[in-house]
Each structure stands twice: as structure tokens, then as C-alpha cells.
Figure 1 (cartoon, rainbow, N blue to C red):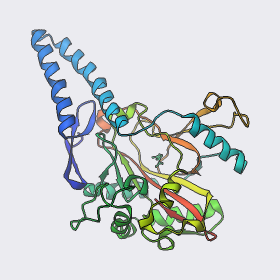
Figure 2 (figure 1 turned 180 degrees about the horizontal axis):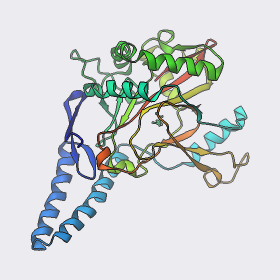
Figure 3 (figure 1 turned 135 degrees about the horizontal axis):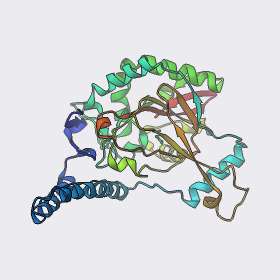
Figure 4 (figure 1 turned 90 degrees about the vertical axis):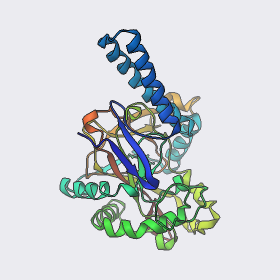
Amino acid sequence: MPPLTLTTSGGLYFVLIPAVGYTLVDGVTTMVAATAILIIVVSVYRARRRWYIVIACVAVGQPIFARLCLALATLRGLNHSLTEEQCRHDLSHRIKVKHKDEGPFAVPAVLSAAEAAAAADTLLASPQKFVHVVYPMPFFTVGAYHEYHKERNRSAPADGVLNYAVSYGDAADLLRPWLDRTFPLVYDRLRATLARELGQPIEWMEPFNTRMGRPGFHVLFPHAAASLRVFHLHSDSGQLDGLRTRESLKLRLSLCEAESMIAFTLPIRMPSARCGLRTISTAACERDPPRCTACAEERVHEYEVGTLYWHSGHVVHQVLEWPFRHADAATPRITLQGFGLRCNGTYRLYW
Ligand SMILES: O=C(O)CCC(=O)C(=O)O
């Protein structure tokens, strides 16, 4: 049986709702859940304890709750369908670099099943390091990803408890030593594998650009809303502009080649349902199609634990939704995430 509650960084409290998954307990979700329960109680009372009506109420309530969570997540700025602009960006990049195959390229057996399991267990033993990302779903990061910390200025709290109000530089500085100490094998394999794939030595972005975070982890617990197409559809190239404008980091990005960007994912634990990535390919599009979104094609890539997936950060992609199974509620989809850029002739990794 999965544990009933989960407490993460900043003391955020999640309760396992049957058929829904861990859900943040705050004013809004408590009100939504209380309303759903009230509707069920009233309908049961009116139905004079006819249990098939109770079951029907619960069955209808679950997708409604999941959709409400999806709506709340969407209100917070997630975009899950392809825009003409995104499609054209992918196409222009494809033409520029003459890509025949855009990836993700899969490199198997970077970690054995036992090594990946050990890394996942270590991570799950530190829920106080999980920083909540997608409201109100159980989607967390461990490690500092600059996109999630952007525009935030609070300095690192004395108690080391993180949230996204903390500036990227401070969050990165706080977590880098812990990540280095805790996951040396994972990082060694990552660097050795990318060095082989790219045929170039691999270094960290810090200290070349100080205050940048190590590749870190996405921890996504299953949730009914994650079985819908909820995840952000994006390419990773735009984030470079965001980084360039962040004065406080004093980064030397003018020494880095934007076109060299890579993005990578190393799954270390997966729920029993199929998990992976959806990418958008413009391979079937002509140079200047009347509507790019009409010729773009979706591709699905199923993840294997221990296999490294990498692609040019320009590929439009989205975490693939996966069906919720209650028995799996405490088995998150955990991946190591990060980016690489060639700066002054050397590939450097960061998140
Ligand atoms: O978790 C994944 O598979 C990919 C995550 C992703 O899209 C990103 O971090 O840009």
C-alpha cells in the first residue's frame, strides 16, 4: 500500500486521494475536494443508500477532479498543444543544421538496473529536497533548474529549505555540493557517455559560469491529471535567452554557441505504465509550408530505466502522459535532466 501522505520541501503536505494520486493540501484543493465529497454525500442521501449510485458518483468524481487539477495547472501557464510559432522554430532549426534525424538518440545501459534503483532509493529517502513545480500535482525537482527559478530573488534560507522563491544562483550553490556527494556514479556515467556520443570532453558549466546548477532530477508521482495531456509542450532553446538576460548570474554566455545545445534525460525509476517523451517532427514539412502545424508529426519515445536519451534542445517535446494506477501511486517517474552547451570549445553541462 502506498503511504497516505508525502511531505516535501517547505513542509508542503500531499495526501493520497484514491484514484487521483498525491495532491497538494491547500485552500483551493481542500475546497474542491470538500465540494466533491459533499456532492457524493448529498447524492448518496438522496439515493437512499443505493450503492451503485455511490460508485457512479465516485467514478464520475475522479475524472472531474483530475480535470480540475489539469485546469488549475493550465491556469498556471502550461501550454500543451503545438503553436505555429513553435513549429516554425523547429523547422528553421532543422533547415539550419540540416538535421536528418533529430532524436532523441538512445544510449542503453548507461546505468544498470541495480545502479538506477540505488540512485532512485537515495533520492526518495530525501523528500525534504523535493521542490514543488506543477500545482497541485505531485511534480517536483531535486536540484536547481534555472527556468523554474527565473525572476526569483530570495536568497537561500538559513534552514536550507528550498522553494522557487529562491534565486537560481543561490539554489544552485546550495544543492551542487549535495548532488556531487550523493550521486557521483550517476554523474560519472553521464559525462563519460556524452563524451563518447559527442566525441568531445565534457565538463560542468560551473565553474566556467559560476552559480549554475548541476543536472538535477524531475520526480513526477503518478496522478490522474498526468494521464491527460497536461505537460508543457516546449523546446529548450528559448531558455538561453532567459539566461542571457539574468544580470545577477553574470554568465559568460557570449562565449557559448547556441546551436551546439543539447538536452538529455536519464530515467532512473519508472512506474509500471508506459512513460516517455512525445516529440514533434517537422521532417515531413517543406521549406515554407502554408501551415507548419498541419505537416508536423508526433512521435512517441518510450523510456527504459538506465538508458540515456539526448537531443538538440531545439526539438519540440513534452513529457508523455501515462495512466494512473493506484498501486503505483508511490512509484514516481524519476529522470536526471540537464543541458549541454559548447563554450570556448568545451561541452559544459548544467540545468
Ligand atoms: O522528463 C522528461 O522526459 C523531459 C523533461 C523536459 O521536457 C524538460 O525538462 O525540458
